[in-house]
Image (tube, rainbow, N blue to C red; front, side, top):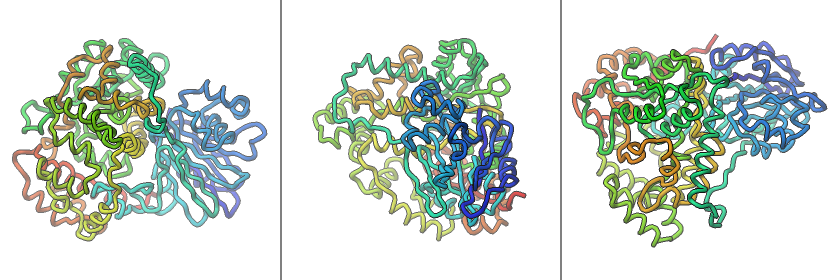
Length: 625
C-alpha cells in the first residue's frame, strides 16, 4: 500500500493549518490510498491516511507526531529490537519508524529494512525530521517559507498552497546532463535524497546520510566465505527480496522481462515462489527490419525472454504497440510532474503497466537497479586492482578479458585508468571511437545556458578510480520514488524493484573483486548463482538489448514541428531553449542511420528532451487553483 503525505510546521504561530493540509492532500489524489485524516501537535499539522498518520501512543504522545508512506520488510525483527518502545505506539509501519527514531535517532534507521518516506515532528526539540529509504523508492519533498515548512509526497502538494514556478536553472542543468542535487525543477521545492534525513528547526536546516554502508575494502580483511557460501547467500537474498514484494493471498503478479540478467533473475524467482501466478511482459520493436544497431546490441529481446518464461511456465506477453509518442509525453509529464525526457522508454513502460492491470495484477516487479547491485561487475573492477597496485592480478585479468569477443583493449585501459585522465581526454576518445558529436553542437539551450553548462561541467567531480565508491554513488543518485507514484496514478499498479532491496545492496557492496570479475569473466558469482533459474543462453549472451531500438518509428518530423509551434509562444520556453536551433534540426530531419551515435544523441536525447521540457513548461506555467 502506498500513501500520500502532507504536513506543515510553523515555528512562529499556533497550529491551525488543517485546511491547508487537506488542500495539499487533494492535489496529490491518485498517488496514494487511505482515508485522509489530520493530526495536530503544537505548531505542527500532518495529514495522510488514517492508519499511517498519527501521534504515537503512550507516554510520548504529547511529544511526537509522525506520518509515513512505508512498507517495512523486517517487522518482527524490528519489533524485537525495539521491544516495548515499539509496542507502546502500536505496530503499524509509522509507529515502528517513530519508535526507531525516538529510541536511537538516525542510527535507529540502520535496523529498518523496507521502503519508506516519513516526517516526524519532535515537539520537545521543536524540530521537523524528514527521511527516505536508501534507494529512494518513496518520494518526499519540502518547501520552506516565511511562516514555516511544508512537506508532501509530490510537488503538486506543495504547489497547491504556494507559488513554486518551474526553475529554468534546474531545467537547463538537467538538459545538459548534470545533477541538480537536492533541488527540483520547481523553484523553492527541495527533495529529501535517498538514504538521507533532513532536520529543520526555526533557525537551522541540516541534512545528513543515515545510510552509510560498508564497502569491501573498508574491512581490510580476507573473507572466509567460500564460493558455495557466496552462492547460497546470493540466492537467499534474492529470494527474500522478491518474496517480501509479492502481493498477499496469492494474487497474480506481473513482471518486466528482457534478455538481461536482472529481470530474468526477478521473474524466475517470482515464478518459483508463486507457480502459475506470474505474467511477464517484454517490450519489442514494432517491426523486425530496423536501421543498423551499434556493435554488441540487439533490438528484439522477446525470443530470449521467452526461454525463461517457458522454463518457469510463466505467461508471456510481448508488447509491440504503444500509444502515440506525444500523448505519452503529455500524460507522463503530468504524472511525473517533471519533463518526460525518457519518452521512448516511458511509452513501453506505460503499455506494460496497462497490460499488468488488465491481466489482474496489482504488483509489477522490475530489476532496474540490478546492474549496480546484485549483478554488478565486469571491466570496471580492473580499476580496483590498479588502484591497489596489484599489477600481477590486474595483468592476469586484463589479458584474460582481452580474449573475449566482446572486449577490446581500449575498453580495458579506459576502465582501468580512465580516472587518471582529464574529462576532455575521455570526451575526445568517445568522439574518435564512437562518433559522439560535441555537446555544444547538439544542445538546444540558449547560448547563455550552454555557457553555464560548460562551467558547471568543469566543476563536476572526476572519477575516483574506486569502483566500489563509484557504484555506491550511482546507487545514491538513483531516485525512483516519483516513478513508483506515477505507476500507481497511471494504472493502479504498485511497481517494485527487488534489486533495490537494502540487504541485497549491502551484500553486493561487500563482495570481493574476484566475485565480480574472474579469469576475464564478468560477474562469476551472479552467473553461478543464477544457473538454477536462468537459461544458459541468457547467461552466456555476449550482446545486450537496446531499449526502444525502434524509437525513430514513433518520432515524426511533422509532430515535432507541431510541438514546437505549440510551445514556442511560451516566454519561459524562449528564455530557456534556442527555438531557431530546434527548428533547423527538425528541418534537417534524417532519413537513415537513425541508430548512429550522432542521430541518437541529437534526436533521441537532445531534441526529444528539449521538446519534452517545453511541454512541461506549458503544463506547469500556471499555479494550480
